[in-house]
Image (cartoon, rainbow, N blue to C red; front, side, top):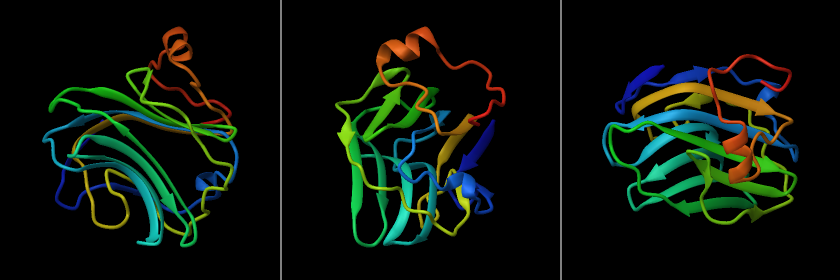
Length: 172
């Protein structure tokens, strides 16, 4: 696992075609623990404030997966109120045109339907940082990006196939 103090530390991975999701299925999931209940960033990739995507929890009580490419936005925001110093499994999933957020195997709210392509950004992919200004004050464990597969599309899928220690497969 990795521990972050919220003051400028993160894991930064060079740009890759692996982060170009287009309109395909994907799952980005990890275990996360927040040290404080202030705004928290789980991951992000950004070229500018008008060209980015990220997964954040805001202290107003929402888990938010957002992308913008300068001309169009996707904003999947669902109510969630975590406790500090508690581990949670968090996942953002795209299955076809359905975007979903899961916490501990339960989907937060309804699907967001959107057929647009995710932006292909020429920037580092960051864990614990959105690529702009927001950092994580907490810990991340078992961070996984799965391209070409929606690992969970319902609560029942998660219950029948819960995450364990991750091993590499064709989609990871």
